[in-house]
Amino acid sequence: MASNHTLSVDLGDRSYPIYIGSGLIHQPELLTSHIRGHSALIVTNTTVAPLYLNAIENSLNSAGIRYNSIKLDDGEQYKTIESVMAIIEILLTERHDRQTTLIALGGGVVGDIAGFTASIYQRGVHFIQVPTTLLSQVDSSVGGKTGVNHPLGKNMIGAFYQPQCVIADTSTLSTLPDRELSAGLAEVIKYGLIYDASFFSWLEQNISGLMQKDNSLLAEAILVSCQTKAEIVQQDERESGIRAILNLGHTFGHAIETTMGYGNWLHGEAVATGMVMACDLSLRQGWIDDSVRQRCISLLKKCSLPVSPPPDMGIDQYMDAMAIDKKTVNGTIKFILLEALGKAIVTSDYDPELLVQTLSEC
Image (cartoon, rainbow, N blue to C red; front, top):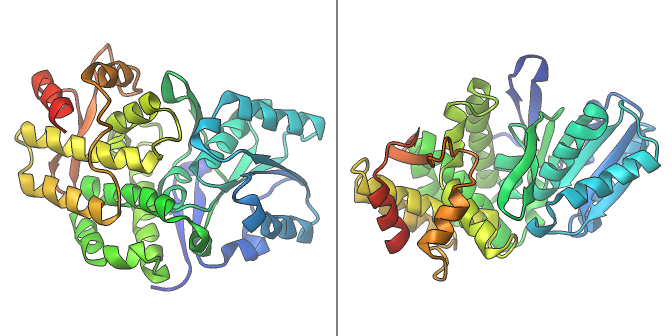
């Protein structure tokens, strides 16, 4: 594939481009052409800042844009309303007005926090996503979901708020720890399971190269993932229908993250296990055969991802956590399950006894 690609998320007056390629953070015009005013705040974390903050600062300097930066602590446990307030304090102290732009430089946690802050500061200012992890490049930076966690539930405080653009520089993945790479691949695999069986087969054939950070293979995986997500988001921006299939494994996974403590299980790790549990429940319902479940488990294992939930989590803990899930309606938990490889549905039409079996036996 060519080194650089531009996709569009078509949402009328909220449409925006996704730039995918190597070395993009060293192309100032990609960033600065999407800054409408004369000021910006870079939101990053203590891990990413030493690696890539200078590149963003150089771009802003080249365009004469006044900026400040904030370095948050790194980790899901810091995805809190307190982090949002720390950002707002700098915005107010440094007199950033409604024409300012927030720049999210980091992984999914940074992007979610910065995007949510942008959605509420002075009732909404622009923001730009510069994702530096595989998970954020293929999933969280695209689609406008922003928010922070509450001790009782993940992503329970948030807003749908679209960025001005997404700049996915694949060269930043060269510094990504192996565990974070694996976590990102869980979300990549999700797209094959829910929407594109041929992509799932491609992943099976190329997983070794992806795990070795082959740049062309990673770029291809990012491109297909973003194309899939953009297509789904364009149909259902606010998750009233088909967009919910993007949450395959997340109902189980969020329960694991919440119960085990944010940051102890990476999001992608919890989603991987949750996808196996969703496959198990789909199998028990008689909607898929065991070959689908086994292929899912095999591919996740090749990514060094967990395929079994924490042994010390009980059924009641799952049920309590899942009852707070955003897809729960009138006390009924909805799940994203599979009818076939590449075809997912959102349903509350499952046998509760089979759910108990899944929770007991996975």
